[in-house]
Image 1 (cartoon, rainbow, N blue to C red):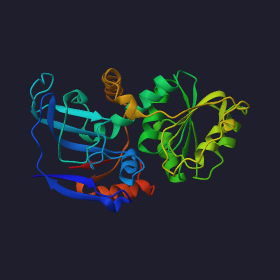
Image 2 (image 1 turned 90 degrees about the vertical axis):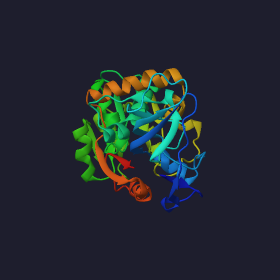
Image 3 (image 1 turned 180 degrees about the vertical axis):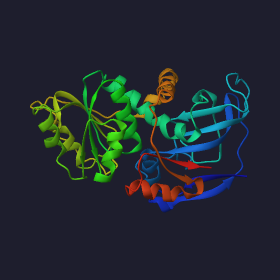
Image 4 (image 1 turned 45 degrees about the vertical axis):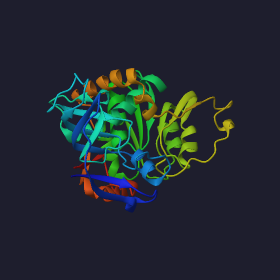
Length: 322
């Protein structure tokens, strides 16, 4: 028997329930994986709460593990291989799972299970944002919200590697040092801070070239005010709540800014993109662009992990250990 976490009814963290099950044997093109570390992401919260559909009832979109058995036709992997994956299909909150072999990347020996499981999907998100949504190069000015969080740290480190100037917001003064350690050039703390004015004062009133907003709620409209004319805002989440309807006049013509709503799930669902971007992320990880590992929780304590994440009581990336 094996343990997994299921959501029977959408709602709060208390809806995450541990149950035992018997894993099935891998079919053609599939692998049976014994998972060693499971990344926790805000999309897991969205699946649990019902904001996004959760087919199968088991949340989780990234993990590391060891191949236990392979199905017919699998020639690229063998039992004992260490692997990592991120993206669809959901179902990572489990000790064991069957998954298509082509979703798995071999994990370099230099990367620990916890680091890989807490970095891979965030790395795919950074790759998507910095290559497809807005090509970031030396001198690009970017705004990263929640820069002390798991994704914020990865975005900051990757952007600095590309030569960007990073403006960061964090939820409290205690988290400001974490953002600076990750490489942020300018940090403002406080959930209600006037970050558009802060950025304007440092850019001669121009604003940043590219802003990444995973906060949502009323923050997104404030983010528009922090971007230069003909800049871009990427809305990638809503940790602070649903995003109110947006009037297109908030984007232009006076401001002349572009709004993107990209999904790393859609990005990683493209087979060729997933292979090439995944390899680029693993290379970046081995060169030091990794998440700052925060709290770890036993798989059975997934509800506590969600409550802490939503309550702002975590820093860096968090993982579940089966």
